[in-house]
Length: 165
Image (cartoon, rainbow, N blue to C red; front, side, top):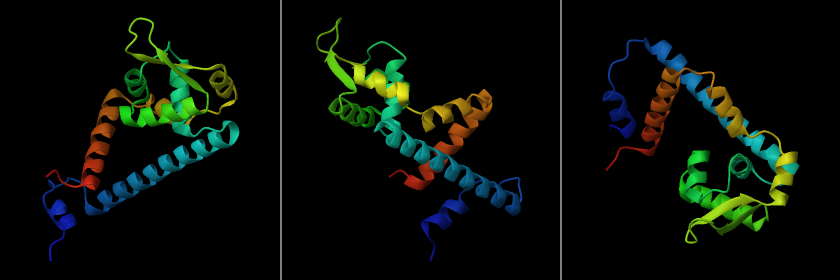
């Protein structure tokens, strides 16, 4: 019986590397992904222990601190996150009194976000986020390497999610 993973393998283009090299590369990919996930998890845990917010919340706070009051859409762009995820993060930050929502000065229909005094105090005590370390490490890659990594990871995620119907 042919499984979906069998068909995925059989439809791939032939690689110029040997099976051994491909296996080594796959092992490097898995180890690298585990290291990244571990770094993000540990950094998030450290942030939560030190200042009471997890990594994603801290990353959003840092992005808000770097600019003027912003909208949810702008914050989603700055954090490289979808708007629904950033909305959940911001709601929690508002509940904790770290972020304030108010009507925008230039458009009363639009909400702007800004740090509260308590949010600024948390940032002064907060450790560096895993996301910021990852973004900083990416600056060591060439544009071509960043593009290749982005393309490869997107294909990997698409393979995990399964074929489009």
